[in-house]
Length: 451
Image (cartoon, one colour):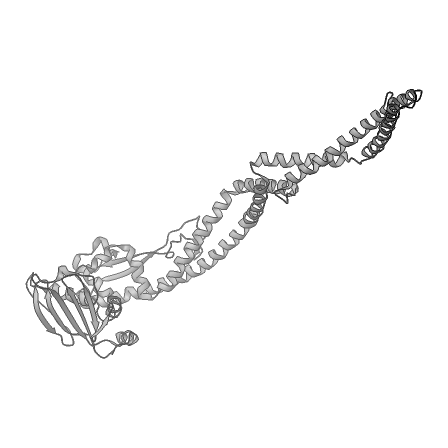
């Protein structure tokens, strides 16, 4: 419980010290006297956001100190934080430059530590707390609070999003089946084409061109050898024949020095012609593989066609082929991907069905308990005849894959149920939506009963 509260330089308060006894304590006063400021000061010392605008005009700081005798539940939290749990003194000081400092039992602490402990020290019920009840989206959370169902609700929420994401993935796979198939066919075709080409070196084209040049030169050399042998020896009027005729003719002349020299030269020419014929024969005997030359030309044409088709050189084609291999693996088999995703979706669906059904059963049990508990609390709050009920609505959906009690039920991210609190404040009237029929005073009392 709160034992003491000291306030200094807060808004219109110069200095105020309050002591509280056990039991009910009431603070009364005229409008504007500062009753709400006392509550505000308590909120501020427990970590609520606030700055220099809260300092009394003309002062340099404000300071608030609260002394508590903690409950048994609060003592466990306080001891875990490393403080003496029998008595707790929390202080806060805010200076005019906006600097805010907290202390617990004179030890400096963070605002987060104060807020964490403060949640177990004070339960504030303000005059506007009931307004939360006007938003029926909060009712399900309040029911889960009462039944301590937030963990299983979190599991349902997590599974719901897993299910929705997996279903979306499956739908995308199905809608993109043809596009993926088309892409797969293109990848497979290009990969097969480049794989069959067996390009191993970026320099292959240059190497083949040099090899072809040698092979084609052999063909020319053979032709040249045949031609040379023909001119030197074989044809009518060959070099050998002409030299022989000249030698016959010169043999009739006297053997002068000049004739002798000419005769020697003619013999040399004749011998050279014979040698040329011999070498020409060897050239003609060179082996020329026309099939090999054709294969080289075909290979060069293939490499040229591939480079023009893909707009890449040989080095880039090799890199592209390796990229296609990885892409082929990543694309995989669309049918296998779809089957695997379907199995995954079914697995999640079964687990979500079980968990959501379990959550629904628990909620229905605790809805009755909460209804009875709130009615019991309303009785001493001048609402003795009031009837309070927690209405859990299920929405049938024939397209839903989820069932409850043999019916197809729509599943939301927090479970099957839509929850709304109903109230009958007067005897003989059926409970209706709290947000539609309850007065401000009735809403305040329902909110207090719920707390």
